[in-house]
Image (cartoon, rainbow, N blue to C red; front, side, top):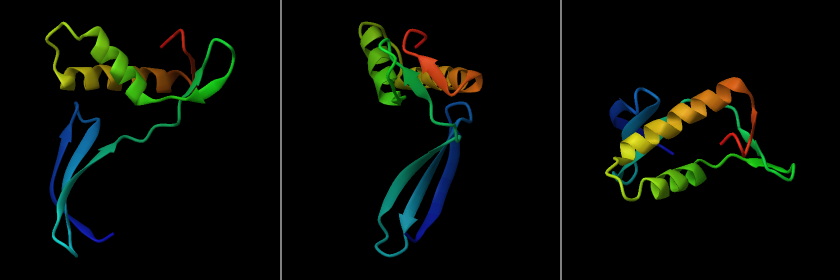
Length: 99
């Protein structure tokens, strides 16, 4: 619970803050990532059911589609950030077809 920030920097075009922290009790160091707060995005499936948006599903799909191409993980993260920003600015719900 008691930590101090050793280093802090913005990454992903200012969308995320990466902080290097140290536990004041055991002196163990670790990294945290803080993203800009967004509302929860709901995905409307073909059958009409709704589920929470999962970033990992999009990332997995993009990595599979770029498997035979030389693309950096940071570029994939930037693509996802741009898509999430676009989707969340339009509405709190999005259809799976739009994704």
